[in-house]
Image 1 (cartoon, helix red, strand yellow):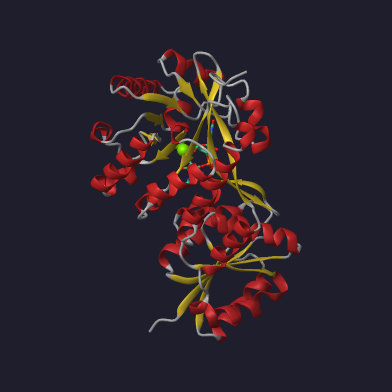
Image 2 (cartoon, rainbow, N blue to C red; image 1 turned 90 degrees about the vertical axis):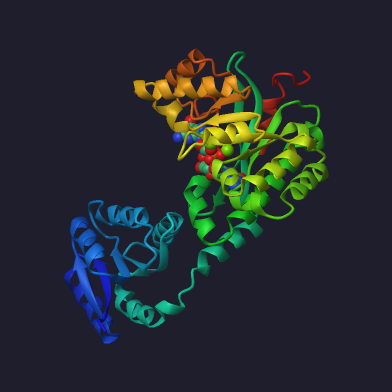
Length: 385
Ligand code: C2E
Ligand code: MG
Ligand code: MG
């Protein structure tokens, strides 16, 4: 049987030699690359089982290699080697993990050969459980929090609701948006746990006694897996009740895939929630393989147009054509249409010109913490003064 291969990005000859020796002692052959191109080639043709990346390059080769591995959804164990201090090491490791990479060690250069030696002996036992444990710890420490992004009525420029978005208030890396860690959390099997936590905490904060006079709505997101849970509707309705809220002031945002996989089940769930008063929004419409028949079959109230259309509209004529068609489609089906991703006055002008009545985006308002909700919502449209 051919020896397993260790692939490394390593320009330092001495480190390369000592890592190769350590690998060879453990029955691995090694391939070393000094450039991103050489690394890609060896990754594709060398059939590696373990990867070592030296982070100490003056240019961005190491970052480019990590990005390449993330794009490839590389499932192999990766060791990062550097002579930076421990805090930087930790931060680099975290970032790479959040990109979905399986980082099994971030080690000082001097220790790299010994670490590689230990590692190749135990690669099989390196479980992907590290990240799961770390995220569960973050949950227990209260680091997974909602932030609230305003949704505006574009005709009156008033806030009519907020969307709760998951953030990880990470001690080392700052406030991380959901997009940075959702895939890693899904792979580690904890995303739904985090998702429920955000829904429950957002309901409690939004419907706190001091806020009950507001008339704005709260939008929450649920993943396809959460929606497929038995008892999803009961759990959501119970959470709304125990927060002191009313279903009529809650919108549930779902993506197409949740509705497509088991349409009959989705239809029953949506029907139940809607008859209890919860409104339903189809999120990111137009992304992926949009099914127009879904809009006819499912009882949605709101269509959220995918951000890409809105962001690209100012510079692309084709995108403007698609955008105006989707707006027309939503309106003729009697749905409220929200343009997401309004990042500039140009995006806003186009959305208004095409008759979009509701909007969301960094230009209109960034996601904020709970203590800023009163600033957003006390003057909100329809809310008592
Ligand atoms: P989404 O539900 O479509 O949320 C909108 C995303 O767009 C958010 O990213 C928001 O921060 C970002 N965004 C808002 N305005 C702009 C803009 O003008 N420009 C740009 N470039 N981005 C903008 P975030 O928080 O990283 O969330 C990404 C996705 O992760 C969400 O997309 C949603 O699918 C998911 N997600 C977020 N929070 C939760 C949650 O609590 N539960 C579940 N199941 N999924 C969540
Ligand atoms: Mg959403
Ligand atoms: Mg969206």
